[in-house]
Amino acid sequence: MKILISGSSGFVGSRVLHQWQGRAELITFPRGSLAAANESAIRRFVETVQPDVILHLAALSDTGYCQQHPEESQRANVELPVWMAKAARDTGAKLISFSSDQVYAGVT
Image (tube, rainbow, N blue to C red; front, side, top):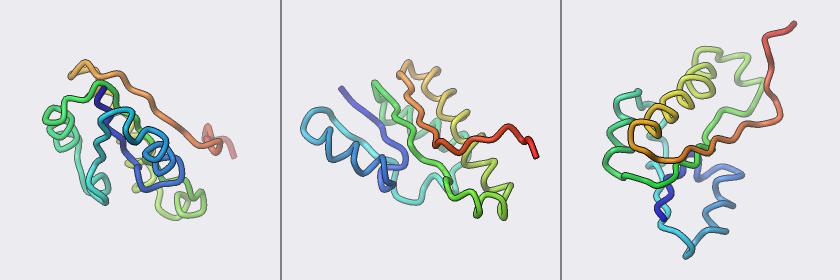
């Protein structure tokens, strides 16, 4: 089984890599590449890798940072997961996406 992992250097991602080492073919996005990637770059990478599973763990989880950088937060925590979902759908990969416990509905 080939698993493509986003956020592999984060808290959860690094533990997933450790737990699954030797049990599956693990592929990660190059460090820092998701910060600058657009939807077509994500799609190209997924099409090249052809994973069975996309494990999407990348996010901006610091709520203070997100409040100070709403555009970057929107991109990382809303647009990027949508792009991952589309790439999974288009390549036939299964998608597993994680989210923190700090999800808000815009309620003040």
